[in-house]
Image 1 (cartoon, rainbow, N blue to C red):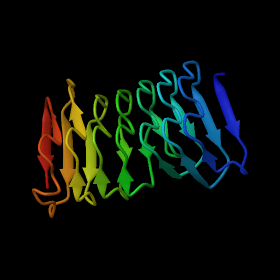
Image 2 (image 1 turned 180 degrees about the vertical axis):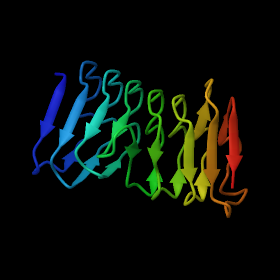
Image 3 (image 1 turned 120 degrees about the vertical axis):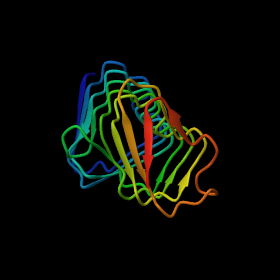
Image 4 (image 1 turned 120 degrees about the horizontal axis):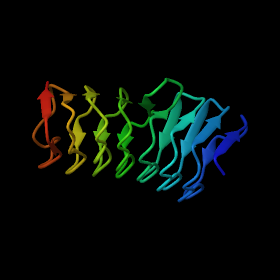
Length: 170
């Protein structure tokens, strides 16, 4: 399977639904609201885009090791999620993602954005809690991260943000 089109009646993709489907490149939804279960696209190394909607919520490990992923949602080359908490390992090793829209996220769990080497800018102005190792990148890109100016030391866990060429702004 390389392409999947899901009609408007399908609003939830269960846990492990497309687990390790290494040839899958595109998933297109017709529904308005989509919920993606844990491990739904785990290790889909060829998956480039999940398109058709703007209201996507995801579970832990949903896009783990989707190294070709560049788009989730309706905007070109942007990953947009509606979660308030970005779950653990949600986008771990998604190295092709250049841009995330995380405007509704208030918490980022362990390794949620770890090893996303294609990202150059992250705006986390609503985030009040960032877990250990949540955002870590080794990249030749300069990575600018704007965090909530009111985040406290309790909200910013030890080693929560790190890597090469990272600049933090508040």
